[in-house]
Amino acid sequence: MSKAPIRVAVTGAAGQIGYALLFRIASGQMFGPDQPVALNLIEIEPGMNALKGVVMELEDCAFPLLTDVVQTSDLNVGFKDVNWALLVGSVPRKKGMERAELLGINGKIFVGQGKAINDNAAKDVRVLVVGNPCNTNCLIAMQNAPDVPNDRFFAMTRLDENRAKSQLAQKAGVPVSAVSNLCVWGNHSPTMFADFTNAKINGKPATEVITDKAWLEETFLPVVGKRGAAIIEARGASSAASAANAVVDTVVSLTTPTAPGDFHSVCVCSKGEYGAPEGIITSLPIKSDGTKWEVVKGLHLNDFAKEKIAVSINELTSEKETAMAALA
Ligand SMILES: NC(=O)C1=CN([C@@H]2O[C@H](COP(=O)(O)OP(=O)(O)OC[C@H]3O[C@@H](n4cnc5c(N)ncnc54)[C@H](O)[C@@H]3O)[C@@H](O)[C@H]2O)C=CC1
Ligand SMILES: O=C([O-])CC(=O)C(=O)O
Image (cartoon, rainbow, N blue to C red; front, side, top):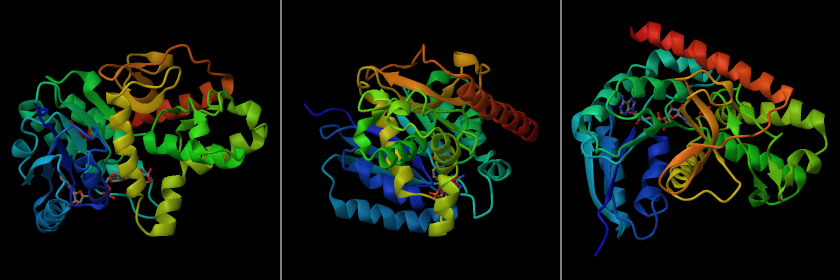
């Protein structure tokens, strides 16, 4: 007997990331080659015509796993019975802006979406926020969905993890698959800490393989932290295919068992782990058994790491205050 479809809502489905993401979900790359999927595609009114074109292309792929597609600008329809809500739809930053500057434009989107998820989604719904500033937007959605447990809300730092792994692999002259245990801590902003102190290369501490401390502290960290801006500078638009890839990776990491001893970066609601204030959405090392996820405990953080993480956490706390004041 074939499995029941997993119903996935994607907001901003006609945008750049949506265009790189939907085909990967429908082809089975997110939930596996024998798992049917249904897509609820949500756009604002001006995007509905472009969305129609994207849906025509989905039809033209004749994906065997895609059972049905809903196209809507009505949030109550869009989030009806969804098992996953991928919240991408929002305005991307332009050259010269920081992501936090988007809070005033994008923050309010997540009030209505949080409420609609609360009222319509399936009982097991999980929510991944991509739209920036994603940590604080996730917090807003979570606060507006009081019936959905906090541990079902995630924001995306997997793109930062993937970027960090690539940089370390290039420096060490190894394939990217040799790099593991890479946690990006804190905010999806230039203050994020891409933790080379706990990372491993071929199972050895990365700092024993890359002994150039100045490169790790003064080149690697800013390259990873400001990679999004470098892409906007080069492409004239923010990252899309790599962002969509990171959405797939995040969901796969939360829904399949993590390799023993490894972890991945996901922003979750803090319960005070590693000294982060409770109730902020911050990036932490996460492992999954395929069904339930948990924060990996016991990682050693040296003074350098602690200092960097504290800066990012302080930024998140102040973003939270700004958002709460603006939406009060
Ligand atoms: N967390 C991360 O690692 C990353 C986050 N992003 C963020 O993802 C977001 C989307 O980026 P792109 O797809 O490049 O932007 P885009 O402008 O190409 O597409 C956004 C789409 O969202 C739609 N939209 C706007 N408001 C909406 C609403 N209230 N409900 C539903 N749809 C709505 C627009 O009509 C548009 O089609 C941006 O905020 C960007 O900064 C981008 C890359 C990485
Ligand atoms: O930098 C941006 O605005 C888009 C983004 O979040 C990223 O590429 O990491």
